[in-house]
Length: 265
Image 1 (cartoon, rainbow, N blue to C red):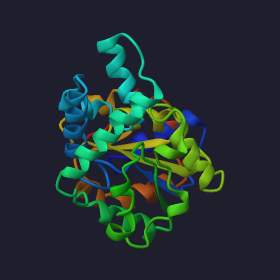
Image 2 (image 1 turned 45 degrees about the vertical axis):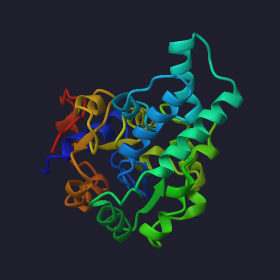
Image 3 (image 1 turned 180 degrees about the horizontal axis):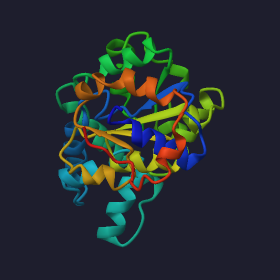
């Protein structure tokens, strides 16, 4: 039995499925498809500093996936004892975007195109669900992932009102994909808030730890599988898809599995 079989079977048992019936795998963008999180973290730190606020670069990784306004409000409440109004959010986020665009262009995450290509080869539709509103990256999707994503199904910051860790972005992704269900959906995330959102949406979540956070930051939020790079995931994604779509002929064998479902490979 492959190492990921038990987490998949446990997930199906928990939700009352005999198997998954995958139609789509939803991918976060920053830190999954593009190696862009160091640039985001630096830009957030510089923008906050410009306005007399403090957001350490290391902390920015913990806020990945949150809407810009959500991140700004956390910092202003902590330091100023109040939320930021719409004008403040716009100014700070504009400054953050200016700093982000000063950085060298973030490259495609190693192994990511292999993962997405394999998903397509399996007859599964890849969809982007990101909390980012960074135009420079959104515009580069087709350049870096030609003919792999349907732009009209993409979910970005502009499409949601709450954002991660709320399940809204992934629920929106399922809606855009034709009102599919969590049973038909997997999520690939690199951020704690994104893992929370995927789990809250009822999806099977694969965490890929491409940043500086400890593995526990992802597994403690409920990630069902954990890899340490997209390259590592690319070596197994076809087998994971195949396993997830197979009926569990030994369902009773899994009733006594006492595990969070987290697995580091």
